[in-house]
Length: 340
Ligand SMILES: *Cc1c(COP(=O)(O)O)cnc(C)c1O
Image (cartoon, rainbow, N blue to C red; front, side, top):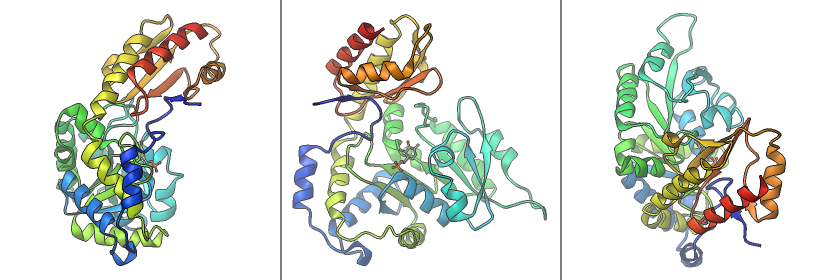
């Protein structure tokens, strides 16, 4: 059965072209830096985000963690948002792998502002840890995008205080699409950046960690330390090349579909979406109805071939992606009306 899957953009299936590219990929042993397809992907990724070098890693989590390991020393503190992937969804890895603690910024909009950075930076004092890194996210996990002006201000503030900036850009290309700029315009305000090819860009596996040559050399060593050295993984990298070259332009379609879905949900009694926050491919819908059972709602949708998360609190997250069409959204809304 074909499902309409709105749980995430990680569920995207590789395209036929990707499957063919996997079949045809020229490969080698990447620990010897001998895989021509991985080398091509890394060059392409670096160029795309305006950095000197890049490293292919198996996941966004691995990219972020290698970045933290490479930028910091044990005992440092990193400045990071309370709702960020690094704090919420990476199993506390920064504490475990890098031995750092978190200076958590907790704003209702989940953004980090200049004032937050200034207030969290540690001064020299025998009692304090050193501030080792500022970790930003763009797009944010709540589906909103940080502007170029804000990025610039944060970057300059951190650099004035000799603190490097890592960007978790899992959805960097969604943010760039929203801002209508090339990804490197955002990445210019970072020292390192991770982006996922396995989400809206539809590759089966992987992320790219990008930065200076020197930084990536260190990161390559850290990847090996984590057991993440790759061999003939050009099979996977071949998809990443297609992601970057051919799947970026279609992200606007996902964003349009998210807006379309949000507009339709807003017409249903008790359902509300803040349209100002529908900036990428994510729709956060609040449900305010008597006796509404989120679990049961998700189960009934599933019976109709629609996969969704059952929600957190009174909010359901819908994520549009390559494998969901506008017609699918019409069907989803029709089913929601029927169920309630
Ligand atoms: C998806 C995501 C990641 C990486 O997730 P992996 O499953 O490890 O690839 C990192 N940060 C954010 C904000 C994400 O949405």
